[in-house]
Image 1 (cartoon, rainbow, N blue to C red):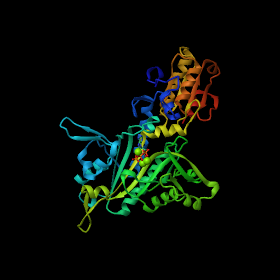
Image 2: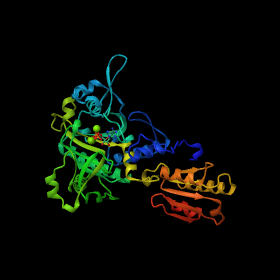
Image 3: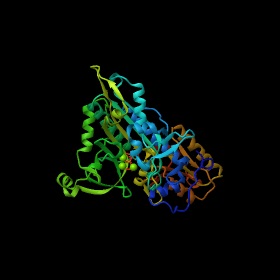
Image 4: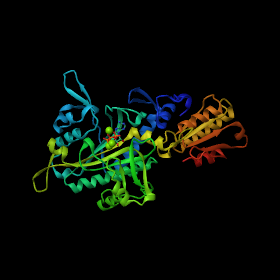
Length: 440
Ligand code: ATP
Ligand code: MG
Ligand code: MG
Ligand code: MG
C-alpha cells in the first residue's frame, strides 16, 4: 500500500479524552474514531489489525475442532424470557421494539440463541460432541464505557458453545477451549494467564478468566511469579486426546493465580513462597464457563441417549474479547514514540520510507524494494509522501510496524539501504536484497 493512496488520519496532538496509552495511541494512529460513548468506527489501520486477530481466533478454533457459524446481532426477547434472563440481565441489555411492537434486543451474548438452534436441529447423542462458535458484534450498555475499545458498548466477541452428552465430555470441551485460548493469545504475542474466576450472569461453577498483566487493567490479580513464565510454545496438541489436553490445563492452572473476586489470602500465603507472591492488575481478554444443563433444561434442549432416554444436553460457553485485545496488545507493546506490534498481528509487515520523493533513482529503488517485498508474500506500507524525513519516521514509529526500510540517495550511492527494528530501535546498513531477506 502506498501511503498517498491510503487513509491514515494520524493526530499530532494527544486527544484529551484518552486516559490510557492504548486509547491514546489508537486515536493518534488513526485506527478508530468514536461515534458515540463506547461506539467506534474502525478506520483502515484499526480494521486491518482487528481482521488479523479474528483470523488467528478462527484458525485456532478450527484447529481445536470447533465449527464457525454466524448468528445475528438482534435477537427476539422471547428466547431470553424462556431462560429467565430477560428480566435478570438488567440495564446492560439494550432493548429495542420493532414496528410491530415486538420486544427485541441487541445481543450481549448468545447462550439462548445457540440453544434454540441446537434444539431445532439436534435429536440424538450421535450428533455430539458439537461446538459451534461465531465472531460477532455484541452490545452491552456499560455504566462506564471507557478506555476506548477496552470497555466499549459495542464490541467484537468470539463466543463458542459446546454441546455434550455427559459432564466428562463437557469438561473435555472446557479443557479444549482453555488450550486453544492459550495458543491464540501466544500467537498474538501476549501472555494471558488463566485465573480461577467467578461466573456472574452466565452461571455455572467451573470458570476461568484469561488476564493480560497491565498496570491499567481493571481487575486486581494475585499470582505466583512462576505463572507468567509458562509457555505452550510450538508443541503439537491432539485436541481429541483427553489426557493430553487435561494435562496441559493442569500445568497452567495448578500454580496460584486468581482475580480479586476469588482471591483467598490464606491459600495464597500457604501455596506461594513470599518472594514469588505477586499482586498486580490485569485485563480480562477471555473467559470460559462450564454450566452443565442451566440453559438446556430451561429451554428444553434434550438429546436421546444410547439407551433411548432423553436428557438435557451438557453445555458451556467460551468468549474472547477480540476488539478489547487491540487495547490489551498496545498496553503490553508500546514505548514513548508509539505502538510496537508483535509480528503476528501487525497491520503491515514492513514500512518503506523514501527520503527523497521525486528523485528518480530513489523512487526506482523504492519501487523495486516494494515489488520484492510483495513477491515474498509480505504486506508493505510505502511512505511515498513529500514530507520531511522526521515526519515520516514519526509516523512509522507511531503506527509501530516491526520493520522499517529507509531509502535515500546517500545510501544508494554505495548500494545501501537502512533496516530498522522497531522494538530494539537498532538500525543496520545493508543491500536492498539483504533487507528483503531479513524482514520476516
Ligand atoms: P468485564 O468483566 O470486563 O465486564 P465480562 O466478564 O462482563 O467482562 P464476558 O461476559 O466474560 O465479559 O465476555 C467475554 C469477553 O468479552 C471478556 O473476557 C472481554 O474480553 C470481552 N468484553 C466484555 N465486555 C466488554 C466490553 N464492554 N468491551 C470490550 N470487550 C468486552
Ligand atoms: Mg461485564
Ligand atoms: Mg469479567
Ligand atoms: Mg468475563
